[in-house]
Image (tube, rainbow, N blue to C red; front, top):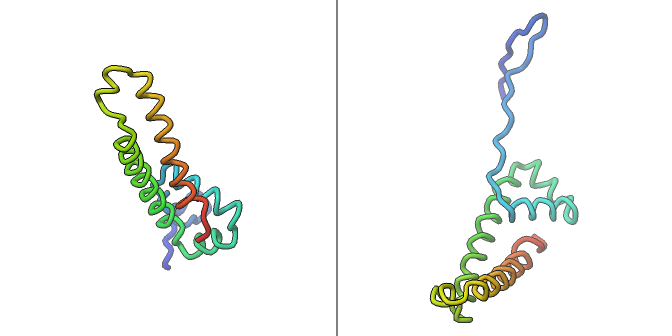
Length: 116
């Protein structure tokens, strides 16, 4: 790695750029927190090898897709439709909240809070 420098006053400072922050959402941040707290050796190894950000982005994407897929599937199976939404909105909201929570629970158990 070759460094370049700039002069500021009496000092020569290196031209450094911070690495790009990973583009992770809720599930990527939960995974990072889990790894840091419960699998610190693995977390540190991934961080030092430069694989952590890619892993977090992948887990975030997979968990989001899984939650969306399971939510749609469970809603179909339980008969939660747009007709129900039009006729009894509060019941629809309650059912969808329960379905979404169940789908999130599955994603958290299978993707986030697991050993590697």
